[in-house]
Image (cartoon, rainbow, N blue to C red; front, top):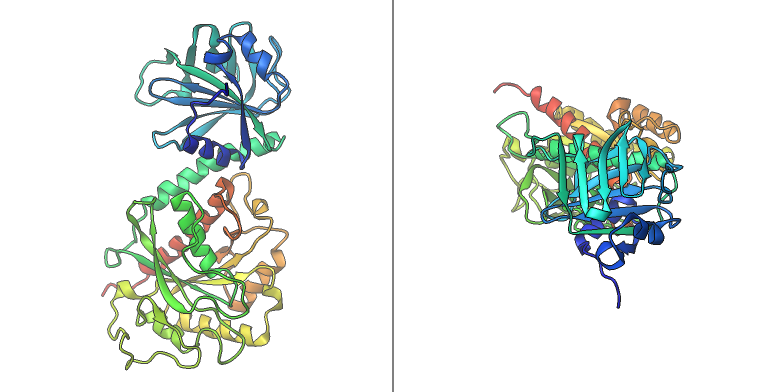
Length: 439
């Protein structure tokens, strides 16, 4: 008879995403294999990295161990490489995950996890009890330590995890930072009450990744990869309509106070791609959602859908010049000319603007240990300098991102980069709004 887990499908998917799309194999289940340390070790020793899950009436806890289970009275060979986590009611990982800074230890009757010399998480299988102390306690409890019974203990082998303690530290820190960024963006409000929702325009050459970035932002807030904005690899622009995309927080969540606007790609040919004369109308808010672009004929005030007197909230509040990092140094003179003309229009209307370099292959290099200075990259230094010189954009406003292009699942590290770039766009926009005339 097959042994089944208590871990729900959604919780398992959340755990796999946290650990880097690993696979989990059930090794031990206390109600089936016996509630003792001896039973646990018999099935879990020398099995590689593991996740130990504890189920109570109201909560689900877990502890990840990099490398083999420690032997009795001996510490693991991988200090500073295990961490604690718990699950929310919707089966998502509760953050912050907590990194233990000392290797776990097994005795004849317990499995303990430490912060320095203090036991923060202790499992006592013989009595089916668990001890949680210090920063791991829920805020609703006021006692210094929690002892309570658990219903079940399960141990999973983690297959496909990197055997690198540095990687484990990055996982926990990325999870914490991701939640911090999400909370900040969910609470974001434009700096003026005159604009309930910001409009951020993606503008760049055909195939630079404008639509893909919009999909990537939506993916982070939805928790799954989204393909709403049409993308492609054709030499001509796939996007033919002007689209204004709202960003919803969760499947049935509210729309956040910023929208991403997609445009037809710029083409080096004169009668292909976005018509340059359309750009001022887009910036002023004269072009409606779902307007069908005509590369050979710009929109005019006589068009049936032309917005003759757009309000401040219908204008573009920030322009993002989207460029492929792999080809930005080899742009044709005609494309550079078009980009400079577009930049001149943006400056004429005094609109906030940044540059976004997409298709970054080693995006994890950009994420420093403290998740700061993300635009400092030795690999892409020449591209950054080239864009700064070409469009007269300060280096601090040149952003870099790895979009969700071919992936099927989201990744917490990549989420951090995408959310950080979005936050920088909003900050640039706020600077523009603060500089608006009082009238």
